[in-house]
Image (cartoon, helix red, strand yellow):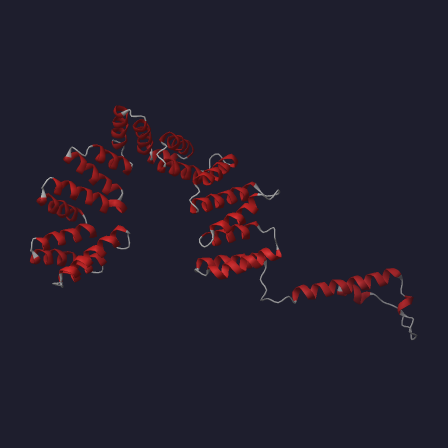
Length: 365
């Protein structure tokens, strides 16, 4: 365009009316070139410190990942103030607000759902966000509505099906839970392969809710026979066989094995059974057998406590030293070493409680 302007040749006039001697076409071309140049330089001289909406959104994400929620919040508000149609900014803003003000998060996400022209994908994202809001607000009925809204848009949405199944399970609505489980198995081959035991568990629990105990036990045992047992099956069978000590204990051990995060609860159940039946030596044997198979911080902590109760301090020290040699950085071992270095009963008790709580919360092994 500069070349075009340069190549325009006009006759040289000395009088002040030379500009008006140009043809209309020549005047139009000059004005057009000047305008284009102005726009070009204006755009290119834009301050590099002012990010585009995409850059600002990415900066908000980075701030959020870094734990700077307030910064992310203000960046998103700035994006929305410039572009009220930025759906992603609205969705993320609502997610940030959820922890502090769930009611406000609901309002933000509802504004997205109610938009007349919104893609199917973004509408699903908005319903997912709303379902999370209502779950946070403990409004289960509304959460279920939103989850069903997701399924109306995407009948094979695994996330929504899993959430609905969890809600049904918590409410002990086994028939509904079973319906969602069957759907999950039909859409996910891996789910089907891994959760055959789970399916039989839900069938069993449905029979239990109808007081059909024979079928309840039959499907629980069928669930337990699967190569990959669903942990809740083992727990249910342990509770069902509470009058048969050996069977109950075997299922609590199985539950602990397949659900390590809940093993402290299972071992406490076994302890209670053994103590109630005055089988005190069996408690020590339980934790020794666990430590023979693999290291377990809870088993070590409890065994050290049992040995201290029996005043077998030397044996307790030898036990801790054995594991300290191969696993010296493990916090549960170090806490037990600290416990043994003290003669104060209350301090020992406090350390044991702290160790158990930290293992239960999966803070340490």
